[in-house]
Amino acid sequence: MCLGIPGKVIEVRRERDLLMGKVDFGGVARKVCLEHVPDAVPGDYVIVHVGFALSKLDEQEARRIFALLEEMGQVEGGAGQ
Amino acid sequence: MKYLDEYREADSVRRLADRVAQTATRSWTLMEVCGGQTHSIVRYGVDRLLPPRIELVHGPGCPVCVTPLETIDRAHAIASQPGVLFCSFGDMLRVPGSRGDLLQLKSSGCDVRIVYSPLDALQLAEAHPDRRVVFFAVGFETTAPANAMSVYVARKRRIANFSVLVSHVRVPPALEAIFQSPDNRVQGLLGPGHVCTVMGTSEYEPLARKYGVPIVISGFEPLDLLEGIWKTVSQLEEGRAQVENQYGRAVRPEGNPASLRLLEEVFETVDRKWRGIGTIPASGFGLREEYHAFDAERIFGVADLQTQESTVCVSGEILRGLKKPPQCPAFGKECSPETPLGATMVSTEGACAAYHAAGRHLPESPESRSAS
Ligand code: SF4
Image (tube, rainbow over all chains, first blue to last red; front, side, top):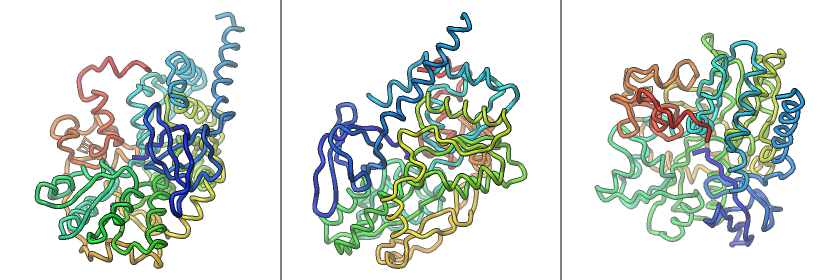
């Protein structure tokens, strides 16, 4: 139930007193409340839980682990494996 | 799918697992907090990629599992009343209470519906002004902002036929209960990624300091979990006990300020009973007085019902990291997802259900041994 899934914002609009939008989850679009990610714009990725966006995903942070893996690969390579 | 597939790539997963094996020189017992993490670990066989020196035990972080049986029975009593439209998340409606699960009430003419979001429940209340719409609001801090928003908007829009049955739980007090227990085995912790997306990481600092347990806030994909394990083991090997954030792409140290403001507005901290564990002080959220008009427990006056839990079930020990599902004599026999006897079998994120889904009640399960 604590499942939060990443999706891509494809539409932002105001619905009465709430900031809402459409988020695409690998081809399936759903209505999502964007009240707590007020600066999200189409193209941004957000973590969504029970129809509610909790945070915007940080692209630079997302790449960090791959840089680490690459570094590890080089160290292994350098050690003559 | 971006932000998912690249974190499941088998070769990278194996490389990180090797790194963990190189780092660990002694035996360490780590706990992952979230049911979502447990599910992912068992599904991708992350635990089986680790050296035997590293043991993973599974934490209390499945909100469906820890919702007390009497709360389910209370929900049952409310949903059975005439004119009520009762709704919640699907997994909550399938939890067996003393008299069957909530969805079964539909066959006796009650209106019970699965909703995807608490805001959908609010919409049902606006669409059916003649009905009393009750939303069963369970969950950890991850779910709290969405649930709080439904109540906040209901008050603002004066939607008088909407109420919530609140059984919210908070992670840090449960961890404190585990760490301070004399039989605690947990030496390092993978912290709850999505909970911290909302709450930030500061609540975990005093826990790490006081109990000398390194806490690495971790994501939910195999690479996230392995990096979290590696960082935790590194701290243990170096004799450090700090809070680190592995899941920086979603978690900011300060959390989500808008969510925190809303939680402060709608909820206050209350004592809460956890299924399988008992009452933990200050471990829940309850509605503030200004929102009592939306509190289903008050509106429907459901009396505290007495319930009887199974005596063979060891889910309380599983939730505290003292035992694992195969150590329960009923696992995969009398107890299965179809006939759950206890807390950790009722939801797909419970440790017993996760082991069962991966076929670990069967003698050999080769498919769950591969990383992808
Ligand atoms: S297998 Fe069933 S009875 Fe055994 S601990 Fe898990 S939930 Fe309880």
